[in-house]
View 1 (cartoon, rainbow, N blue to C red):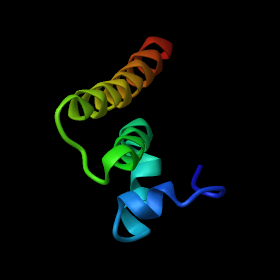
View 2: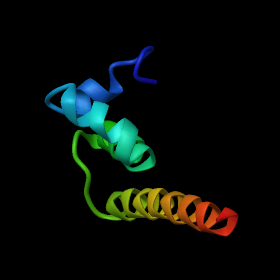
View 3: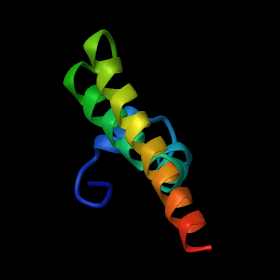
Length: 72
């Protein structure tokens, strides 16, 4: 999506935030950009979708830590 569309550049003012978001919170960054594209702002139920994406990012970090501690 970053390479083939301008969705991220329309949702964010600079390239730095989506670049860092790609590495730290990829699902949240993507959900925010997609929700932004619908009306050039994020409001109402769209924040719920962004929140779910944030929880998905947190769950991936938690599962990675759990798997790492189970191997030890």
